[in-house]
Image (cartoon, rainbow, N blue to C red; front, top):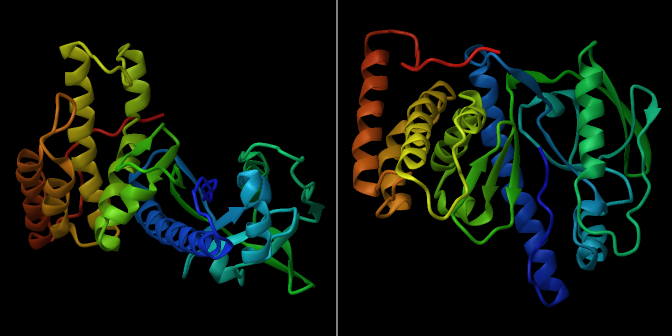
Amino acid sequence: MLLAPLLLAAGRSDDTDFALTALRAEDARIATVAYRIAVANRDLCPLKSPWFGAVVHELRQYAPRYRPAVTRVFDLGPGPALAAVVPGGAADRAGAQVGDRITAINGIRVDATPPGKGEKANYSGVERVLARLANASRVGPVAVTVERAGTPVTYDLVPDRGCRSQVQLETSDTLNAGADGTMISIGLEAAAAAQNDDELAISIAHEMAHNILAHRDRLDRAGVERDAKVRNPQDALEIRKTEDEADLLGLYLVAQAGYDIDVAPPYWERLSGAGDATHAGGTERRAMTQRIVDEIKASRARGEPLTPPIAIPQP
């Protein structure tokens, strides 16, 4: 998982320190919920990716004005380090700890070049590390060497397999969440709107369902204008279909991961408002998701496997 670039408008240093600490806690929460959903549903997903169960961050992903505070608060050096570790996840089982500075992967050093003066916030350093971990994991356990309290430590990391997606927290001031086929982006306000992990799971699983169902590719092939302020009715209808499908599959993902599906109908009613041409309004969405919840519960009562009634595209 990626830790979002810091775009906060904090003033005093203690404000910034608090914001950074809170941001990291929210990132850890999102990483934990997403990990659980992805791994629990791996048998459902034709496309899988390694899930390491850790949030990697690096100095250059933060805006230049915040890098001194990041260095101080997180004791972050110029190279990548672990901002969070998912309890019970692959990294946790390997012995990883928050604050571990990653220095080598399978004996090959990791780039620790500091960001250039004034270099804009970007994910390039973190993306390189994640790509190296993923590539190395294809042939077996990954030997990760870290610096911990000044001492080198090496552990073997064996990732879990899960539905192909990455997840990131974005410091946006909207209730938006989105998926682009691989990446799931959860806005800070969207995360805050989830009153507990069960509600957060509903939001993350909805976006993961978009990726599993290859909705972005489907809409692109159909020539649908997704981001247009004014859409033709047919485009709006196609988008609405994908949203309803993501609600359906998302609830099955949540149920398989062991989260409480009963929170979904009131959660979507609260967040959906009046709705529009591409999204159901709160009342309609509550009724629709309640029907799905009832179907899942009925299947469980009959002792049936949780098989979503929707075709999942095969690669």
